[in-house]
Length: 215
Image (cartoon, rainbow, N blue to C red):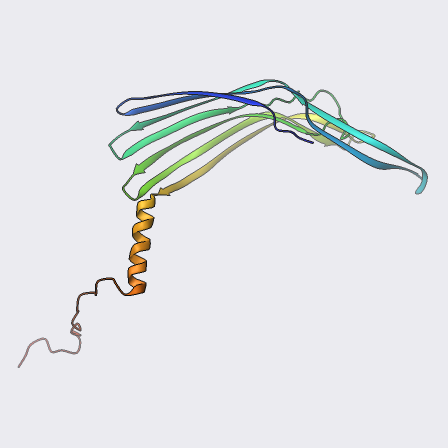
């Protein structure tokens, strides 16, 4: 079971002749049971290559989440009437408790705790046909991950620090409904035969077959 946590979001924006700003805040309420798994399992003990015991048991793992606040900030600056530069940044803080000391797969449901920051920068072109966005997105995350320690006996999970860095090229667009309607009308006219006939064209002379000068 993993019910969606309750969230409260608020935002504010402002606009001037060449600048647009927007600030958003997201508050996630804490949950004592962010996720729960209940499973029936069979435990088998083996010694010397032979099964020594079998028993049935039930496994319960519960993960809780603390209250967390994330924020986002975006801006758009118009260079010309139809061309602008956009940028923004948003946080993605982790609400799970940190991993402490050796752990096992039976004690934690999520074996990763990462908090990150995402940013984007690009340009937008506004035309009568639609909008075109070209830019890049940058991601950075840091936190902990439970990794298998094969040197311990029995094998266990130890928390290690980890980081992630990424970049993504963004190319997106939006076509207006008026443009789609116009293209559909032109295709319909061509199929139904109501489109205007193309202008008559004469057969072009082949220069290699005709003499350069008339005798």
